Length: 137
Picture (cartoon, rainbow, N blue to C red):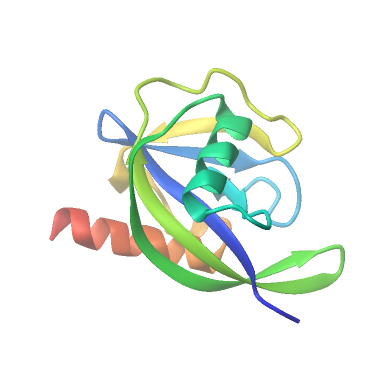
């Protein structure tokens, strides 16, 4: 089985982190970054902008690659290996709409308020830890 490519963004609004609560499994009810799977023929950046817009109605600015981590994504009883490409960026407003099949709510938290154990996947927890290290020294 080949590895699937996925992308996500640690988005900031006035120094706070935009997080989404997952509305479905895997990791129903846990926190997630806006993002998703990269479609064939699509760049990570284009997929990320598409996913951010689909999930929140927002356009992200200043997207910069932060890191990548492997992940295991359990879907319908099958574990898919993924490579999660994580970016940082900004938004200038709160979400204008939520893709309710994917997202039950959004949160806007100070970085120190984010509990790593509430983040859905190990790859995203690792990325957020790295984000905190690079932003706070």
